Amino acid sequence: MKKVKKTKKKLVDKWGKKKIFIYDIKPYNHECIIVINGQMKDVVKYLKKAKVISTFGRDLIKEIENNYDEKYSDIIKEGNGRLYFEDETGYILLVNHSNSWLKTTSNVSHEANHLSHYILRNAGIELNQDTEEAYTYLQAQILKDILNEMY
Image (cartoon, rainbow, N blue to C red; front, side, top):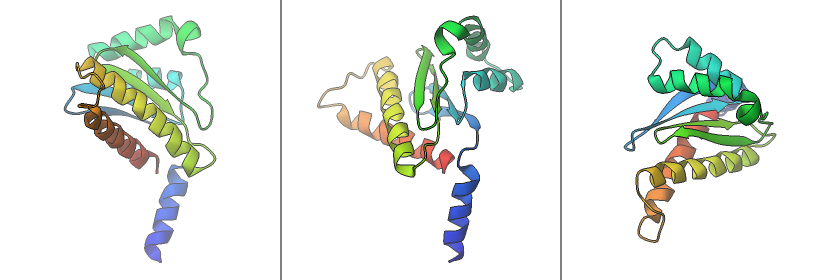
C-alpha cells in the first residue's frame, strides 16, 4: 500500500510542473533541451542562468531573441508539443502534460519520433528496412527518458 501512495504522490507532484533539462542523446553526440510545461522564453531564461554556457547556447539565445515573433512565439498548449532544431547537434523539445496520461504519452511519443528521425538522419542513417530497429530503439529510449522526467 505505501508504494502505491508514494507513486500517486510522485505523479501529483510532477503533474503540470515546469521542468527544463539538457538531455544528452548518446551515442550520437547530440543534445536536446527538454522543456516540460514551458515555452521558448523559458529556454532563454534557462540558458542565461546556466553557469557554463556553450557557444551553441549563446548562439541559441541570440537566435530565439532575434526571431522570437517570427519563429518561436507559438504558445505550446496543454497536451501539445513541438520540436525545434537549430543545427545538426542541438534541438529543443517542448512538451506539456495533457488532461490524461494517455494523451500525454501519445504526444511525447510523437515528438520523440520526430527527434529520433532528426538525430539518425543527421548521423547518416537513412530509414529503411535494415535500419528501422535503430530508429525504434532510439525513439523508445527517448520516450522512456522524457516520461520518466514527467512522471
